[in-house]
View 1: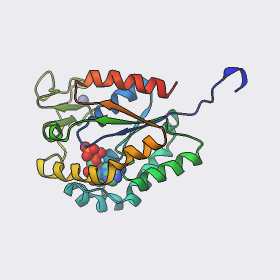
View 2: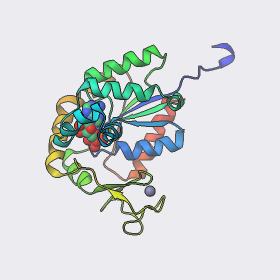
View 3: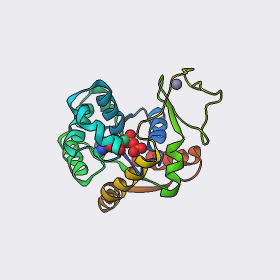
View 4: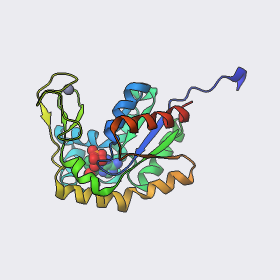
Length: 228
Ligand code: ADP
Ligand code: ZN
């Protein structure tokens, strides 16, 4: 490179881990710290369901059952969002890819735009704890901040610490039965991605059973190295 200048290609980070691993919580923190855009296919699909789009209509029952939405729908949804201008700052993918087919589609998309994956970070947790984490969680309808009945309650009951909204939401698929199916789908279809990214030399593992801030600190180390 001329004069030690580095090419300024926007970073691409992937968060891997089962439902309840804390991908969304950590992605929001990284978004603030690094000025990246969090892309959650779960959020995009829930928005499509709420808006009643054709994709949303197909996804609704599948999501309620805890199964994976078809690769076709998810890839198209992600691709559309990735093309929007703000994503040029760099992205944190949360909940995508979730299958080998999606991972290959992402590789193709990125090679089209001259980008690469800086890091695929696996949040390492124990399944047994995930049901409790998910069953107690809720989020603010105003700003999207995530909370948990026991692990991260609001300071004042029913009022968001960040924006003061009193509109709290619980997801339809956050019940014990659906969680079990989501964990099964994770192990069958998504866990193989850990090997996929390890083979590419892009994988980092972060223990994620501890406190939210400790995990954030470890992620910070990995991300600053990967984007340096
Ligand atoms: P969690 O990771 O806690 O299960 P998400 O919000 O990421 O929650 O996903 C919720 C649901 O949305 C999944 O159970 C699945 O039905 C669907 N979904 C989200 N992302 C994908 C994806 N990449 N591929 C297939 N289905 C997806
Ligand atoms: Zn809020």
